[in-house]
Amino acid sequence: MNIRFYNVRLLTMANGVKVTEGELWVKGNRIAYVGDKNLEAAARESWDREIDGQGNVLMPGFKDAHTHSAMTFLRSYADDLPLLDWLHKQVFPMEDKLRPEHIAPLTKLAIMEYLTSGITANLDMYYFADEIARAAIETGFRTVIQGSVGGDASGAERLRQEYERLRNRHELVTYQLGFHAEYTASRELLEAVAALAEEYKKPVFTHNSESRSEVEQCVEKNGMTPTAYLDSLGIFNYGGTVFHCVHMTDEDLDICKKRGISIVTNPGSNTKLASGIARIHDMLKREINIGIGTDGPASNNCLDMFREMFLVTGLGKLRQDDASAIDANDVLYMATAGGARAMGLNDCDTLEEGKLADLVMIDLRQPNMQPLNNIAKNIVYSGSKQNVKLTMVNGKILYEDGRFYIGEEPEDIYAKANEIIKEFTK
Image 1 (cartoon, rainbow, N blue to C red):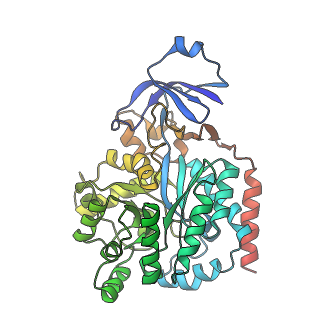
Image 2: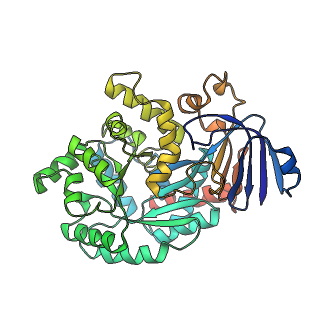
Image 3: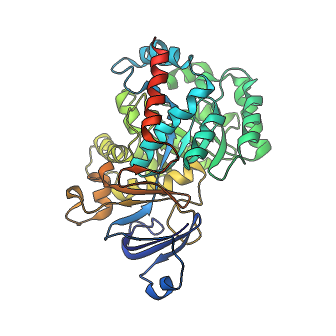
């Protein structure tokens, strides 16, 4: 479809957080024009739809750069427990019951929530990757899937097969090499993953240094932190993206800078699980690329980028004991272009001509957005899902004014998710 947005404020993220007035054209799945009002040229075009933005903001969609979407079935199922009890007594036993046919409907439920939060793409790590891809394709959502293998070296062959099968699966689906974490992988598997990275000349994605005990155990076993250990094996020879990174040493951060590794912070999950507060201030000082992720809906439990953005800056200020630390403008970059870069989505990071049309309209005609002293900081400090008026992915409007256009009725998706949890808890 050809869609013209006019009478809008543009927050392109291409040149900082400057807000301008103008219009944006979408032709097919790409942005054809973004700039000043252009009535004469617009009159010569044929439009399927022309949308009056009423002075609202168009900006790049948020990127949820680390999540486990299908864990929606465990939302609020096992909360307020110590981490190890939560994992070993509640989460793992329930996950053992998952079958491939469960994943797509559970993932679709998460996709609906992403859309209400202005999220246009996610980086998903979970079981049955083909079913994750199916959910994305059927709903029209953009998903980056990463490998999540663990255990012995046999996982490397599964990772190779998955990579070959899914990396060119669909225009909405990409695949990244990855494994679950250092503490769930044998040295033989890690060496095999490093060999795959060398063979394909690709980055590697993984959980890293989420808890203090994880780091201590790695140091005791290997004489190095997880970051240093993985780097010593060649895992990051072509860069990568690491999630959480709550307990990082200066050496760890220097490795990330040297190797061009992106860090994805997950403040909601890290707060709820009492994992700690990441060193965002020190990461920014080193100019390490940072993205933001919600983590899964079992440990968060909300897939809400507005809450995550506020926590990134709020917790960062607390850690530094400095209200000027972690500027909201930097956080807005993390949630959009920084996340896109961490996910390998360099074609939908900003609103520019020729880029993919993944965007969100933020409703300024709400009390929490007034007055318009600073629109970008309003979005980070006072914004919420109520301000998401429209979410477009790949040139298609998937959510608008509270309604979903994802090829399936919301009530049907809700029903399937509830059927699954009832089946598991009989």
